[in-house]
Picture 1: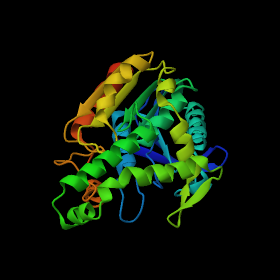
Picture 2: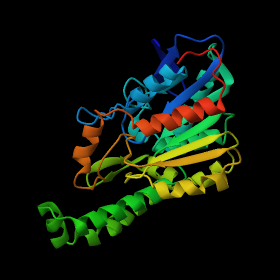
Picture 3: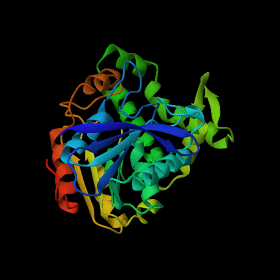
Picture 4: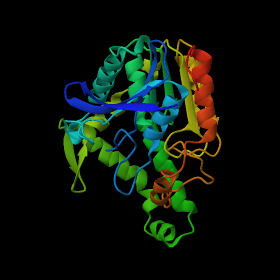
Length: 321
C-alpha cells in the first residue's frame, strides 16, 4: 500500500508541525491514530540527537498506514520544526497540545471524528490518559508506561541503578561502590526533587544545568490512576519484560481502573524502545544499547498485538492490507 504523507500545522497555543499519513486505499471516513512520543527533546520520528535516533514513531506511523489507518505525529513544543520553548513546557502544556492534535484529526475530511485513537509511548501514556479523561476518543493504546506515575517510574529506575552498582563487575561499577555512590542515589534524587517542588519557576539550575522544574512538578502532582478511572473507551496496554524505564508489573491493575474494555500484555525480550532485545540493559550499558536499538524494527510480537487489537475492535471494511 502506498503512503501519502502530508506536512501539517496544528494550532495550539503555539504552532506545532507534524506529519499526517494517509493510506491511498480508503472508501469512506475512517479511524485515525494520534502518536504521542516519550519524554525528552525528541521529535515526531523518534530522534533526540545525532547520537540517539530511536526511529520508533516513524516506524509506528509506517506500520499503521500500511494497515490502512490514518495517523498523525508531531514535534512537541520547542522541538524540531515546532514553535515554543521546550524547557518551559509543562505536562499540562503537552496535554493541551495533544488535545489540539485530537481536534485537528477530528476536523479532517478523511477522518471519522468518533474513531480517533491515541497511541502514547512512555510519557505519551500519561499524556494520552489525561486527554482520554477529557476528550471523547475511540480508543487508547499505551506502550511502555501505563498505570504508572513519573515519580514511581523514577523511583524504580533509581532502585535498578543502585542494584546495578552493587552487582556490577566492571571497573566503573567497582569504583562507584568504593566511592559509596549506591548509598547516595536516593538521597541526591530526593534533594533534587525537593528543590524543584519548592520552586515556582519554569526552570531552575541543577549542577549548573538548566532543567524544567515546571514539567517535573506537574508530573509529580499528576495522579494517572484518577484519570484512568474516567476513561470509557477501549484500552490496550503493552510493556516489555526487559523494560528498565517502565514497570510491566503494574499493567495487571489496568482493568480495575478503566470503565471500558481493557487488555494488557507483557512482551518478552522487549525493551523500552519497543524493539527486540536479548538482554536487560544496565545503567552502564544503556547509553550504548539505546542507539543500537534505533536501527532495529519494531518488536514483531508488538506489531501483531497492535494489529489484532485494532482489527478486532474496529471495522476495516473496504481497506486493503
